[in-house]
Length: 398
Image (cartoon, rainbow, N blue to C red; front, top):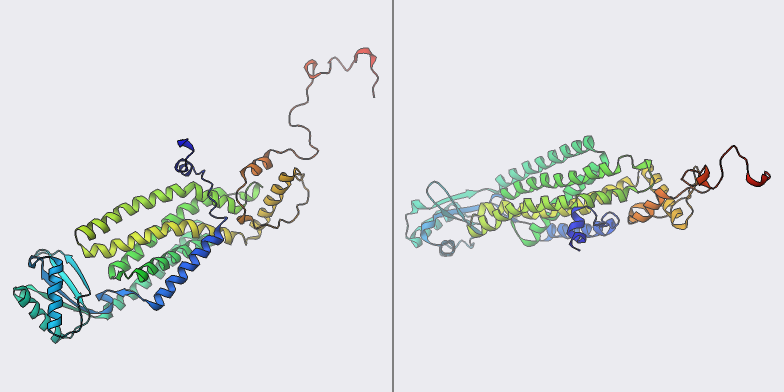
């Protein structure tokens, strides 16, 4: 029984999941999620870090107590100086002089920053020289964003060229659409949940593109293998061959995603959660979310979209009609003979699930009016005596 379980069938590529045939469902779900993400961009926006929104940061030695103690004292100093702001983010950082706490606030004037620094030193009972403060302008974040967008455009252009040379332009379009969907959905999660966007987040966004591309190429390579010379036979439509490729590569993609997510999860939950390394949190979070979304988009968006685009190719359209016509004739017991005209099929080929039994019958059924496949028996064992055509009893020729 265990041999016929779902896990075993997934490993053998025999699960029979109809991913391509249900493409309208996946496109509908993806469209709704993209709409929600865009609305979140417009209404909620993003929680920008100090590098993008501008602000001040104060670093105090970790010897003053816990991170919560440091945050409480800094908020008290901000209130004492009537700045009207509070600590936005806190994190533990390491350095040559030992561990320290970095506390970031919205933009302060130079006079306010100096006064707050002195008040923090007084409240914590340490020398003012032990506290460092920095002011970051939002212009720096704008430069980072511009370079990230430029890098994204160059990356997508190179991906298009590579996929066109490696596969074809339809696969390139489907892959890039999957990558863009991945970016929008990941950014939508950041906007909805309120995760902070930092330069590490931007680096993570560019990193997950490479992972998502690898996952798509793995599936497309199997699709190309299954559909090579597909128009020479009448057993499978293009959508069915692409769906088979997904089933055959699904477990490989799943294993790759799990193996990639485990170290990223360790980086996020152990490094950021337990050890308090805030810089690891920004990078690990976007990698974890983006890789998980990349696995889904490469399976549920890229290949179904490819099948849809290929369905507009006249050669594939004609092939799909031949397959459906032959399959319908087999189901009625009327396999068309050689050169017989084929009626036009009415169904959408890629919407039909794979019918393995009909495909097998289509390859094995004899043609109408054909002789049996076995040889005609001769000799004494064939029921007719040999010997030059003499018939016992002098039977007359009819």
